[in-house]
Image 1 (cartoon, one colour):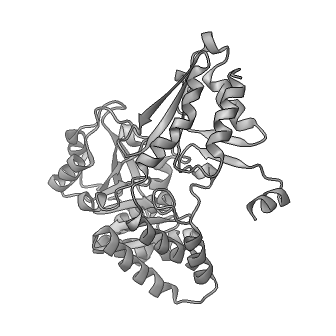
Image 2: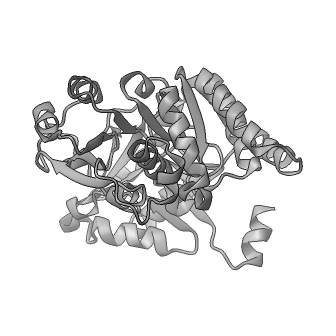
Amino acid sequence: MGNSLFSKYGLKRVINASGRMSILGVSAPTDTVMEAMKQGGQSYVEIADLVDKAGDHIAGVLGSEAAVIVNSASSGIALSVAGIVTQGNRRRSEQLHKEPIAKNEIIILKGHNVQYGAPVETMVYLGGGKLVEVGYANEGRAEHIEDAVTDMTAAILYVKSHHAVQKNMISVEEAWEAAKRAGVPLIVDAAAEEDLQKYVKCSDLAIYSGSKAIEGPTSGIVAGKREYIEWVKVQLHGIGRSMKVGKETSFGLLQALDEYRVKVDRSEEEKASLQALMPLNDIPGVRVTIVQDEAGRAIYRARVQIDPQQAGTTAKDVNDGLRQGAIAIYTRDYGVRQGYFDIDPRPLMGDDMTVIESRIRELTGGK
């Protein structure tokens, strides 16, 4: 089915060894999730009722007071900011584009103002917020946040992500304590995090992707304090209208979330699957090791280091070769300038690992 569709539209086969990346369609939902989407899509439902009931179900799973399904974690940032800036006022929400709201400053640590495919600050701006960066690129402390709070401060935004600077940054728990001391709501962007219950405990609003760890359809979740979630729901008739969620998506996400709750931790099995890449260590200039996720999640990847002197090629050239082949292989390539790239086993299917091993072997001159 997949292959015939791909050939119909002239698309390449893709092997995703980079993780849950939006540029590759994030994740591959299960048959049962797709069946829930089919059933949901082929039925009629009162959308307002679905928004409320689905939100209640999700809140029960996450342990929050309330929740709402959104179009993506990215739109979750814009809608959370808009909800807090307008305080759920319908007229203000509709006039967001022409009536400036004085109390609209959103404080963020400088090391958290990242680009994840779009800049975080673009989403803050879309929600009517004005970003105030505090701290330094390599240091973010509680006092940096607290010293910046004024009468114009609407919220604090904490970005829990591998994209963000990790060193010398306060933890989300410390940011939560600072927010409470300052009497300002805390929004946590936890898009790709695996622990669905942690972040609602230390924030007023926590944002998750529905399609990353949860492996549902393209979607997001905003969960947190009931009052703030009600404010976010008002935005669904404002800027959120252009980010609306289809009924099929809601049913698919609910199913994926129920499956995620009972999913066994597969990290050890995934780690073991990386052994298939270890024979590459026999090739001169190629070194394969297993590394844990830089943001501390229980995710293990194979790091392929290329020594240009011995291998006669660079990590960047090998990585480009993998992506540009007849089968496009995408790695986690943040380290190519430092001479390595990582293979993330989580999205791999079928013979993907074998194909990756033989392509790296070809590109590094291994026989």
